[in-house]
Each structure stands twice: as structure tokens, then as C-alpha cells.
Image 1 (tube, rainbow, N blue to C red):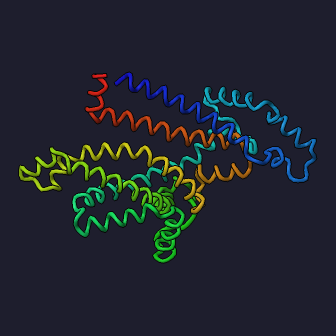
Image 2 (image 1 turned 90 degrees about the horizontal axis):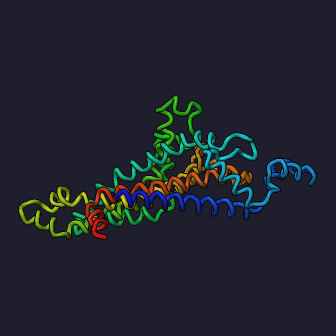
Image 3 (image 1 turned 45 degrees about the vertical axis):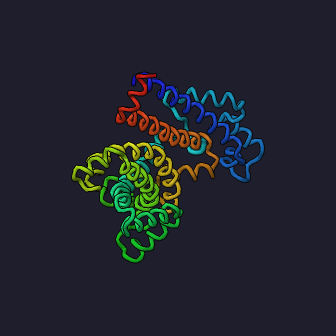
Length: 319
């Protein structure tokens, strides 16, 4: 197990290094000039050149990359080219919106996808299972923006229960208002991602129902539902944990879109604004952090899966 964790850690570091290079050099291909943005449209070429020199943009790209990597090793994501503020501090501030949004969306997705997925598997030949299956297929195909607009129409416009946009100025100093502001965006992401997860849960539950130990338990007097819940849910849980690593990426992408739709001051909305402003240092820092979160969660899921599944540990001992 120790060897597996060390191997996974090395792969994580290699993945982060590869992601940093891909992000850094890809951003440099984007059109536009941050020095021109800072100087303004009426600036002379000399003024723009002076700003480029001041920001270090005239250095070779490879040298800029090595300087950035050196800063990352010291825990420094650099400073914004536009405002001069540290990127890490701005990310920490915006994460106070994005992280709770992602957690709430994940909780919502799990809250309905797991029980309904198991129910759809147990009653797959009945009307309940068929309706759940078709509904999940439809929801999984719904664009997150359209789902958000429909939920705004229902809960904000028609019912008036939740705010449609914005985040309280007091932030988490007013927790009730903050939760109400994030509830509708989280519901939007959670419903769409949960529908996808429901399909995986249903598939895993159907596979568990067909296993010998579940059929044996049912033959000893348990109902099919009781046999699945008592003996099949551990295998279903392993499948859910594996898929969650993929779902996290969907949650991050969804949060970028939803923060724009609901005008939330999170990392996603900041990223879109910084791309438009050509603030290269902030964009590369934001993308690297988001990519790092996905890679770290993927590594954690792999380790948890290995710890929870004795068959994988046994296979490792025999190889």
C-alpha cells in the first residue's frame, strides 16, 4: 500500500508539472497584450514597451516559465499584472464563494442520486424505476445554463423563495443570507451532475443485484431490496467513490458557468474577467489551482478506493 501511495504521489507531481507547462505556454498563444490594456488605447508604442519591460514580458518565454515555477516552489503564485495584488490572496478570497458552492452542489447531487439510483435498480421493471431512469437521462442531457434559468424562473420569479443573483456584501458574516444566495446555484449544478451520478449508481446497483452473494441472501429470506442494502451497498459505494473523482471536474466547470449566470464573486467569474483583461499571471495561477484540485481529488479517490477494496490490496501482494 505504501508503494502505491508513493507511486500515486509521484504521478500527481508529474501531472502538476505537465499541467503547469501546458497552461503557461497555451496562455501565451492567446491574442492581445496586457501591456496595452494597462497603458490604455491612447498610449504610445514607447509607453507600451516600457510597461512590457517593467512587467518582465520582454524576457524569453522559457525564462518567464522558470521564474514562475520557482515562485510556485516557494508557495508564491505571483502578483496580478493589472492590480499588483498577490494572486494567492485573491484566490483565497474568491474561494470563500466557490468552495462552499461546490460542497453544497456535491451534497445535493449525492442526496438524491444515491437513493434514487438504488431505487431505480431495485424496481427496474416497475413504473417507478422506469420513470427515474428516463428522468435522469433527460436531466443529464440538460445544459447547466438552461437548468439554471428554469430554476430561477421557478424559485426566484414565480415563488420568490430565493434570490436570483448576487452575494451579500457581508459575506459569511451573514451566514443565512450567504447560504440563500448559494442555494439556487448549488441546486442548479447539483441537479445536473446528480442526474449523471444517478446513472452510475443505478448501473452499480444492478451489477450488485446480479452477484451471487446478493442472490444467496435473497434466497435465505431477505427481500431483494434488503439483500442489496445489507450486502451490496459497499460495492455500490466503491463505484460511487470512483465516479466522484470525475464528477468533481464537472462541478468545477459548472461553477465557472454558474458564477457568471448568478453573478457570484467566485473563482470562476474572476477567471473569465482575467482572461478578458489578459492578466496572464492571475489566469495561469487560477487554472493551475483548479487543475491541481482535480488532480489531488483524483489521487485521493484512488487511495480511498484501494483502502476500501481488499481485492485490490490482495492483487498488489501477489504481483
